[in-house]
Length: 501
Image 1 (cartoon, rainbow, N blue to C red):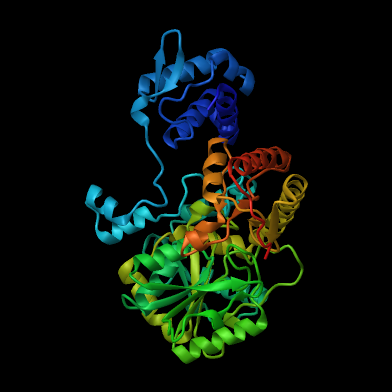
Image 2 (cartoon, one colour):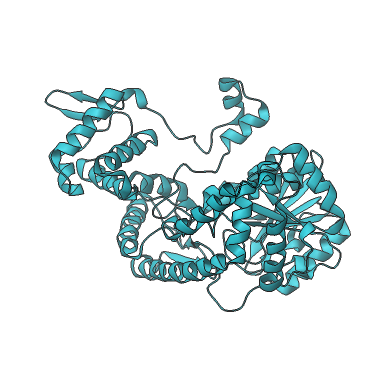
């Protein structure tokens, strides 16, 4: 990486740091982040202090002090007359997608399951900037209101909030039951709602309470990597089921496959964004009843829809009560809140509440109480309305920029809801190699092939998150992405045209 690219990378990271930290602290954190996350690898040369100060628009003495601090802490080394470099002792590498479970097991002493989880992990340390998918813009969250609501719960010394809270905070469950009735046409009792610490815990609870090791799970392919990781870690056998323009095609499932669980995102399939047709929904419910299977409905982004007509829930279509509904606040509030909820059929209410208490214990009752008041006072609805407008503008700007720079190379899917746009390539391209290239230039996206059960059989593409990218930074970020794609195409010996479907 040359000086100019390194300076540009540092500038991008510097701009992501909160301004409240002060200039020197922001630069220190940006540089340390770049080193620890291998965006500046071991041995890489840093820009000269004069060059970096000009790039950032800050004093050269500030850059020198930060370099000196990182030298003292061992992140950097200096060579007289040659410059400043990332320490050679920090030659860390991100885990390779192809790293075998067996080699990790032998090297670390982890269990076979633990090795598999670590080797196949899809989570990313990068949670901000262009174009990290699934990350909201937390800078617009009304934290002043939220702090006041949380402080009120603490100030009143409501001692019941210091306990576990079986099933969750009652007023929050009541508020959510009413919210679901109005927005999702779901008629549920508050007791059917179970408050949990995130959607992954919700999926894990479903797997542990409803499945035995080796049971079959149907999953959308491509589908949400996080759910796949959780279900795989529970020892379940995952059967990928193809997704097309009408959503998961249950008729394409392996015969005579009899799943115990079916994981699906019918209102906005992840990552394609397609809406499951009514015909497919009814067929899926029929297949589930015939197999004695439970359906987990992941309704992760229904609040963030950009057209006036809401898509009904699968839960509301199911008179046989075989659907379990999962929803998270991570996308519409802020990820660190770690609150989600399950809506379960009547007969599962007591065993699920007991299972949750036994396996994980409840908690975060103060936040749950604040959340109930946040909803009841109308703050939640106002925040959603504001963010929908903001995100729609950013979605449109990303779409325009991609069409302008890459119109003939990609086709898009979905985009009617959520925080991302999916693009498939119309020419043969290694999306994982492209992601590695753009990462070095400060652009982060998730390759589409990684959403497939077998990445080697997946269609290459890009999942681009737009929510955390300000409008004025959209076009420059797309320019960098487009340049990387063009470079990858030039590097490849041949380019075969792909179908856009």
